[in-house]
Image (tube, rainbow, N blue to C red; front, side):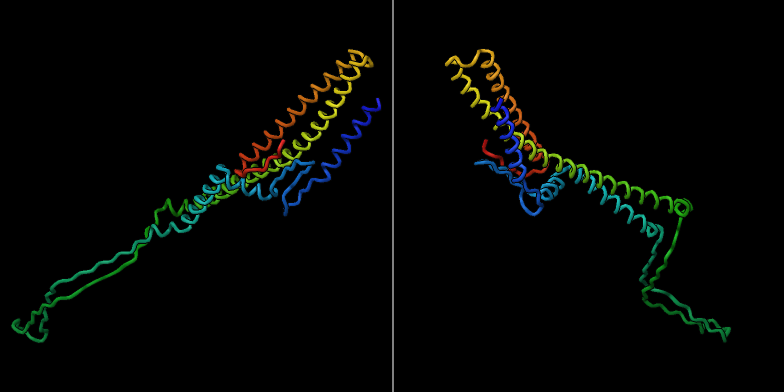
Length: 250
């Protein structure tokens, strides 16, 4: 009975020690240390930024937003499509008749020719009625599309950031759980060794020895399960961020 009480006191002290060694400052790495085992995670904001850069969905929505913003700018300038600038240039020999208005004798008329360059320019504006009627509506639609694209970017940002945060603390929790399970396994192993000696010496009954053995195997299963959960969380975080994370030597 006393050994069981000491066991739980030991586990409680271990949990307090582990959590007291946990640093969550964004300026430094988060480090969990236990004996020779060290588990290090980069700052949370660094992992979030890496995940955003590594996310195909977030990049897609960002590019879609840029396209919608460009379409809105084109809507503001589309009236240029209906303004025409016309120009013409001519070069050649031009004949000119100078008529003497003070004489009825046409022999006094003068015919001259010269080479000249002529040019002209004009600006024409043509606005179809459909453009005048629908322009404001088209502008509103373009603005709505931009707002929609911005909303999609925000949603993608929140989803990626939230997933990184969940996995970040899940990794810390799984590593801590693994340490606790390891302590439980070591304690169960010690109890099993003592039970084997007591059973051989005839001090312990077979039923008690059997229960001690089952507790040891149960502690083994719980330890392996916690270790697998930790590696699974770590692998998900690595996949999401594209950052190779430091793994403890187990």
